Length: 335
Image 1 (spheres, one colour):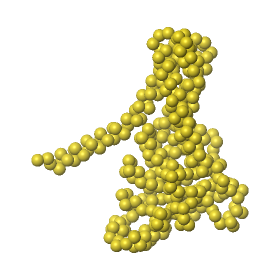
Image 2 (spheres, rainbow, N blue to C red; image 1 turned 30 degrees about the horizontal axis):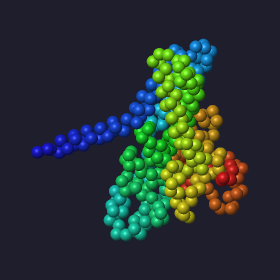
Image 3 (cartoon, rainbow, N blue to C red; image 1 turned 180 degrees about the vertical axis):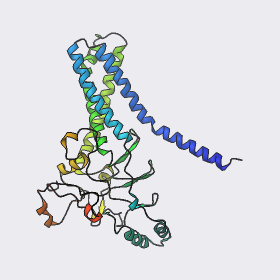
Image 4 (cartoon, one colour; image 1 turned 90 degrees about the horizontal axis):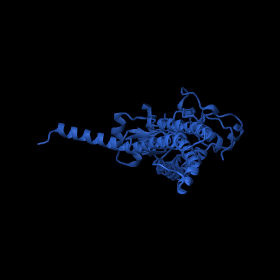
């Protein structure tokens, strides 16, 4: 007869196998990039390119894109996802009350009481405070539960198997830069290998290395075509201050559904992700505004138009929760 220990060991082995399988897409990307390095640096630049000036130029530019791409990719993969702060977690007593509630209205009243001192504006379709029954937490604005990660994630965009991580508040900038540098990396390889690809078809290249150049051109062009639409789409999301989830289902506020609820204008939206220091905009260094829990909202009151022209800034982390929601002061009207 199998013992409880056997079941636990079997369950633990299954979890390890699942974790290992999740890394397969990342290993595929790393393998392709490693091969592309050999094909470009060794087979193309070292053995095929004859001009010393052309060789040095290709190698310098290539390694800039290569390093930036790997840096952004590493940051996207290994940056921890934003966890929901403890203050959003319900006490065992409140959890028990919610489970025992005999109606949706009773649950709504309990959640409203628990969230009265929390900076939450988003609601469910029925107008109830958003609550995760798996994590037993009140969800902060823009947070969602990821079934793959098994927890609620701050400003979740989507779970990406190619980075084996949730794209969220903590690594969204890194993900955008990863797409950008991956696209530039592929375009650069495609353009600089095009001449030698043509030479291959004319029969002017000899040796086994010509097949590396052939596949290098095709794979780089294929990845560039697939990346360009994804990169443009996420640029659109940044300019509108939307996550992928919010683009499909608009966030709901106390006043109702509003797809532009977090839209502060293109430049301010960009700064919310990339920060206000231009030196670090295109470096995979965290510079996003905020803490991932509270986000400035578009103000609908006409009296707030007098605030236009002032510079945006996040409030200090020590500020009271009811002030953090409007911790940015408008610089420009929403677009």
